[in-house]
Amino acid sequence: MILWFGKNKKKAKMKAEGAAMATPKLSADELEQAAPKQTTAPDVAPDTAGDTGPDTAPDIAGNAARPSDTPDNIAAPTATIENRQNDIDEPSDPSPSPAAPQDATPSASIAALSDTAEEDPYGEIKAPGFLKKLSTGLSKSSSKLSESISGVFTKRKLDQEAIEEFEDLLLSSDMGAKVAGKIATNLSKSRYNKDVSEAELKLVLAREIEEIMQPREQLIDFAEGASPRIILFVGVNGSGKTTTIGKIATKLKQQGARAMLVAADTFRAAAIEQLKVWGDRAGIPVMSKPTGADPAGLVYEAIEKAQNENLDLVLVDTAGRLQNKTELMSELAKIIRVIRKLDPDAPHEVFLVLDATVGQNALSQVEAFKSSADVTGLVMTKLDGTAKGGVLVAIAEAYALPIHFVGVGEKAEDLQPFSAEAYAKALVGLDTYSAAKT
Image (cartoon, rainbow, N blue to C red; front, side, top):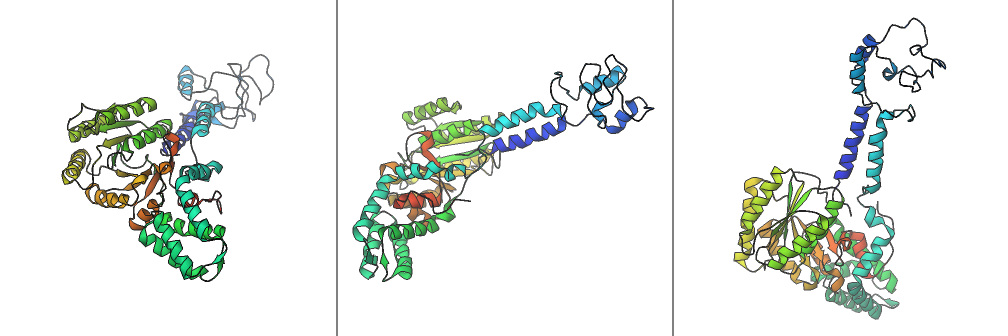
């Protein structure tokens, strides 16, 4: 999963530096003035033993001379010019081929970087194993939905009774009344009074779900924007905020970002220790204070430190708050106000982490945090432990918020980028893409 496109930016920088190294620091005019006047047409190196011809004459260091039509091959007769030419960083090893040896080091570094960088933002989503892994994670939700469809639709006409049964099974899958009604209506328009099989119905349902969720699919590049980029993670107790931060931090570290984690859940000692464990695993510093300390003050100090150290990212873990507790939500608003004293545009992202096991209650959480914390994106966790995966479809229909990640397990690699097509197919029990994603 690519989160930090900084590697590609570093590659571009290295390429530019490689091109600069290949350019002599002496101008063409300077080199022309410094070169000895030639009285014959061919360029000949200074007289030395073992002359092998104008194009292969050994130079003073014993290297084979390169073709004489480039400035690099003009001999500098004085010590001053030789010293200046040394600044061009010619390699001392005579073995490299004459075709631009100056680029050897940068090119090797760029090639190595290319091997580790994730070039295609959609590469993981298009990989053959991605849908299978997501399907495994959503197996409880897809099994429930598939069994319901199998029980209702086994080569029967799609009459009004069948459509009503279909709408009921969507409701039981936590997709909500609005989504269930919309999909049932669209199905009746296109398939009413026609024979429909279980496989056909799954394909139609997957397309309908994908259409609802597609506008919410959004990759995020943590390398964009301000530096340090400040990201706040919010949600209720037990939603998986700390684990999500740890997984994201692990990926960011692997991809070259310089980040800091902030344990601003100062109400729970376990949360602080958990974040420290993730920080140690990823090799990322964690800033914390004793239990009961002022979280807003901690966040302020952490951001100040990150600014002084020119870090790329600050990931802030906040205390779990019940959306119906006004005083706790006010504390979150205070943290945001304090952050803006150091950066008026921060936090640059506010991720609401939702627990799929709560079903339709997740909708009320989105509503509460959206108004109090200016939520910019969603993460849905614990999809592997529930049959209520359909709630994410309901959220996508109700709120115009990007869905960045879905969690289908405990490991760092189990946090996956959100793909509307993959999610829709996994949710209804399909294990192949209809077409490659472009």
